[in-house]
Image (cartoon, rainbow, N blue to C red; front, side):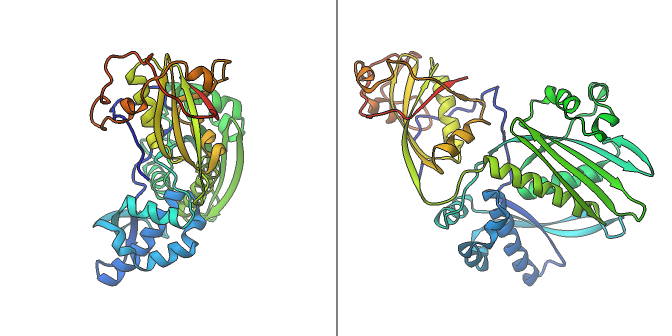
Length: 390
């Protein structure tokens, strides 16, 4: 269902914490050669990878509708190309491998997932800052961007494969003075959180990698945040295997908390947003609603003084919408006043058609100026949600 909007603006709010994750409908799969048989196999694997990224759930690829679609997933491919990349071998040395990179049809994939009752997690996703420590030959140190390119590449690749945003600290003098090796390896969360303040992340990951005597890698992963404190341990013979499992755990935790619920059930609600005093501020809210995976459809119904009212169709219910709002940095919950009643709102009316009849490329038809304090007509019996613009 297409979302109704008045117009689009290129301006992103400066206080948005969540980031726009790109590549959700792209996949990269290793192939033995560029023949048709290998390409067909890789397209199926790539399609499943995209399903996992878009839904946030590793189990989504096992859904019966997804499995049926995967057999003919070539029809979802928009384009593909081959690329040679240097990859860590079993012996730990770089080895040149061939990969096929594919782009899938976003609209078709989303429709399939929704028909299957699976969630569609939008591209606005939380930002995770990862502090990384490495222990080898009895020596412990923090990650060095200039010399740990293989590790950085593995973390970035696995984050891409799961559709999450992992940010690494600059490790400049400010970071080095704010966090010591003993702070990281001692699992002291307070100094890590303090050192992370300059980056304003949604969550913080602490990753500790240790090369043991037989050459295997032992790792400890922690995810901390306002309501999050999880830890995992992984071992493996290859760095790519260990990073894959650790990133999978982080992605699963993020999806459990931030991804919308699946299913075809939708809920119609009315939301009032206050503290809107210009078209630019209104457009900021509309852009956020347009990009939210928890919102199927919305329509601007009315505007009065600094308050606007939206009618929305939510996917996943009120809880999913409230959770989605926590990472946007655009809206915060507000308390309704005694004037926020249908009879009070009806005292001043402005034709909603004047606001909703504009195109998505210019100002709304029939509306001029920057003041939204005009007459409106409100037919909603109740307003379920009250928010304010930050």
